[in-house]
Length: 277
Ligand code: UTP
Image (cartoon, rainbow, N blue to C red):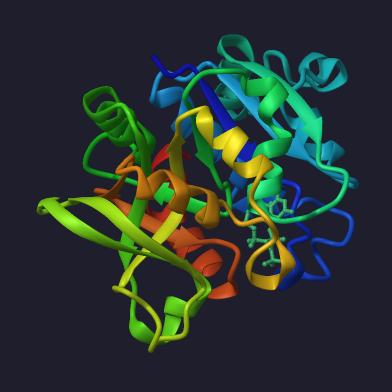
């Protein structure tokens, strides 16, 4: 059973400067809800109750968001706007939150390793909140992946076909097809040039990882851009035949880029906000 979800949220968010100078990228609002709340909602929908968040300097707002503000509760009780807090109150009531700080931003692999004490020796999910995933027609992407984990009992990465000119922004897999949407991963390359890319299947910000990943990460030297890359650690697992790539059902918005952020905002405004107001 998977019960914990890790949210690496310590990155500097340099693509969104200056807004990310004093505010976490994960608190950027998609209409009236921050990215991290969408991410936690997706994890809760997948029946994960323990949210483990890796934060860094200047990220206190993340902890405050998942805490009760007594002044606000008193102010808003009985008012016509109280319903706006329903979603966040539900998360606070039904999930537990724990936090740890990444002291030096040495990459996503390092951020995941920083979460080791919060996760322990069990399989866990990883969600990058700046990749907003929405499946309007059915279950969320993490729910789909948890089901696959229960079937295969190995690490799972979510992948998406991306155009050649964008491939160098991602970790890219090479795999043997199991079925239309499933591959056994045989190779992975972090941020390849279009010529080096082994396929057009890019890893997006959803993972299920088996706990042996921590030991592997401890022994993974810095890779591309001098950062400890989760892709390098996953490659070690893949060589043992233990990584599945899954072409998920739903839509992913790259909210770490201005285009993806605007697209997500328009989508959520039309599909959620307008319908609830
Ligand atoms: P990104 O590559 O998007 O980096 O990290 P970033 O710092 O957030 O944004 P840019 O590229 O500078 O604009 C992917 C995810 O990994 C986390 C980030 O918070 C983000 O969720 N991360 C990255 C860490 O937690 N620690 C790191 O050292 C690096």
